[in-house]
Amino acid sequence: MDLTCVNCGRTIETIPLSCGLGITLNGNTHKWECDLGDCGVRSIEDILCVNCCTKLS
Image (tube, rainbow, N blue to C red; front, side, top):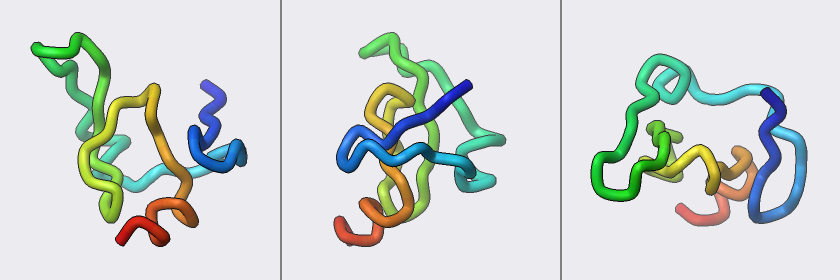
């Protein structure tokens, strides 16, 4: 699966371990989500790269 940062467009080659092990389906939005560490829990459609997560915190 190719992941691209929705903020800057960079290809995301690695994701935090917490995201890889904890992907869940949100019952309210019906979107797949995971814990991206500094970015918090985000849907896979709205995934951000590490650089953009660092700028948010």
